[in-house]
Length: 89
Image (tube, rainbow, N blue to C red; front, side, top):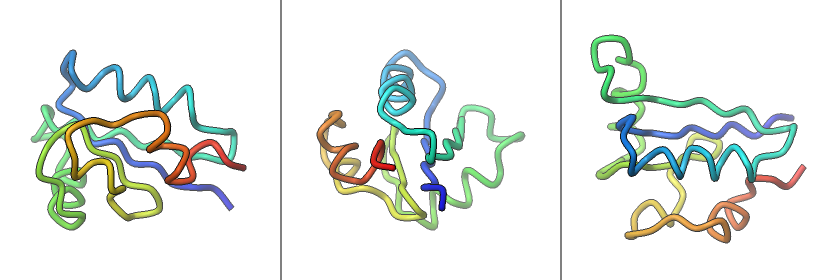
């Protein structure tokens, strides 16, 4: 079963390193979905999910439809991603 990883981004230089970090950390059984919220007219699903998951700041990451704990803090680290199950097949 694939692990679903959703990245909420503003498509900015602050968010891009997190997108890269997730892609580098993820394994072949991870499905990565990027919600670029700067494209609001094109990404209504991302905005709906952002509200559903309680995203308050960007970038943010949800794993299997749940916002991971580090996204409620100031910084996302590789250790946070691994603890959330990203990269474990």
